[in-house]
Image (spheres, rainbow, N blue to C red):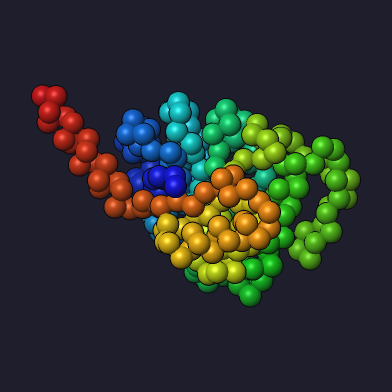
Length: 235
């Protein structure tokens, strides 16, 4: 079970923007992730940009997304941006993916929310194919079509950076296991059981993927208290 800090609603600008990421690394967290939303100050509109900035200010901690909204973006653009993030961070990308939960986001981009499941599955397939194909490849989907396409740059991690799937229902959890992707969730006992059983039934080694606990907005408050305590003791 990996312990991850999901950063949201940070005031972007100035040296304080990346203090939580640096502190999370100091405290031994596995990763720091940035969400994607396109309204108010709830999250970030361009998570690969801020994730790369965080990677440049840290040394060990993984950086990634919680989550990248596949249906709202062209998958080739996502593949390129996050592959570059993996290269420039020296293989520290962990790519969290999902559909999003608000129809307003789909309205902003003029995308039918009824297509979200299909776009999510197809977009994810295209991203993985772009990352793993040895040479030019073609893709014939319902939303995106490619012919004799060569992808660049390839991610540093092989066969591709770890994928974390935002899954709540049992079928989505089983699908994540069948594809060999990591499960993003609250670490519930039932969810873990469904996930492990799907791995076993598909002859996949259970130890090759993980479930995790997400520490979200409250984490930032807790980290601030820890930092305050350390400053007090040192003075």
